[in-house]
Length: 182
Image (cartoon, rainbow, N blue to C red; front, side, top):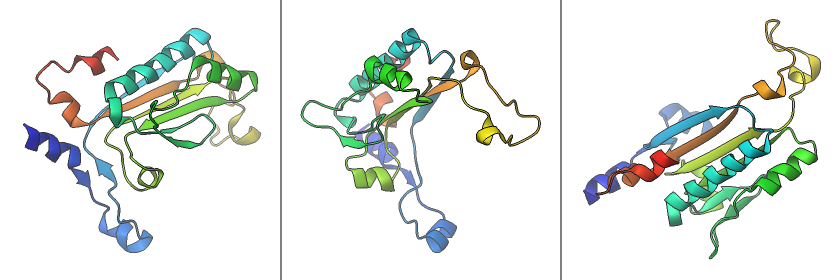
């Protein structure tokens, strides 16, 4: 069982020859894991924001010490300290909304260093994107395509929660229920 965990968690997709040759990318470009994406509406509402922040807390709790790095709403990469990671909460989202920000985003990763975050895919990752106010017309009034709507009502804008888990989280003796509950 331990060899299976090591093999799956450590399996990465190398950069294709074209990327290596023309762009100089030598780091892995993919990794095996279970990924789920939840699309939802209403991210401008406080109750939806509270549930989204609760998902962040639960995800970090499931990962435990694997949750090592985060990209905060302010755009800073922060590494976990003795107290863990600074988590996005409802107050931060509300402040961004009050400032008139279009969205709030947060990312948690299992990368061990900021350099690793920039160079290789993580074993585990959560990304949350909340749309907080009505988006302006596409490209400052210039539509990308004639059939694209120029305005999308706030209650119809789609936010997303993306989560990935290392395969070893599911190769345990007990049922893999924590992620399903999340």
